[in-house]
Length: 175
Image (cartoon, rainbow, N blue to C red; front, side, top):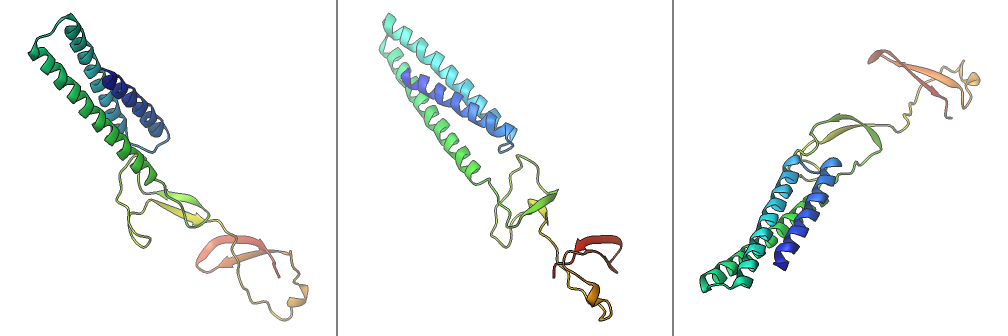
């Protein structure tokens, strides 16, 4: 019966962890549903173990003892299965973190929270997000010799490009 109680406590702890991971967006709802199901099973097994213990205390036949031992074995198996599911969820969480190679702003998300993807190498795999780099931009420009004497560091500038006819990029002279 102690094992059934321990299995129930472990299943409840796992459920609490999975619910937090769901709120944080690290696991899908189905993982939480599986954890709830494990709690239900562990509760049922604990009730069965308590009933068997009551029967044993009241005086049991060899068949009842064998049945109780079978229930204990099943409870142990369920506890092992729940522990394996917890370990798998923790491993998946450890593998779910991604880091960008640059500082930037997310401009497009290609997958949804909780969606499973297949990892890849650094040169392939699944596109997860698209980042826009926010580092300062530098431009090398040609200045007419007649105007160069009037150019000083820190002066404001406005740049235009043929490729972006309606865009005006504001900046300052660096050197």
